[in-house]
Image 1 (cartoon, rainbow, N blue to C red):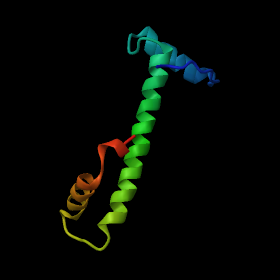
Image 2 (tube, rainbow, N blue to C red):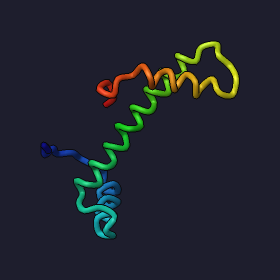
Image 3 (cartoon, helix red, strand yellow):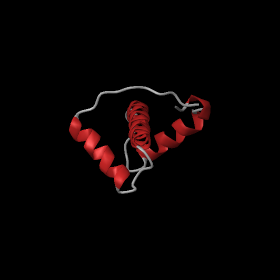
Image 4 (cartoon, rainbow, N blue to C red):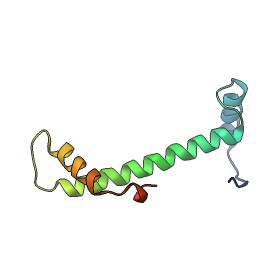
Length: 83
């Protein structure tokens, strides 16, 4: 399902979006905006995951401490909880 929304953007951003469409880098303005918002959503999730990982590492040290904590976190996390 999709929903139409109206947003106001500075002229230079609209021109950038239009150039991407003109050059065939995107099918439409909506595709450019959707891709940018999806990228931002993934960035937010990654930042949240990094913060959780930083908290879970605690006093552990060594070259593999971060990866061990990430593996433990991933094993405990339900895929249903991911946005």
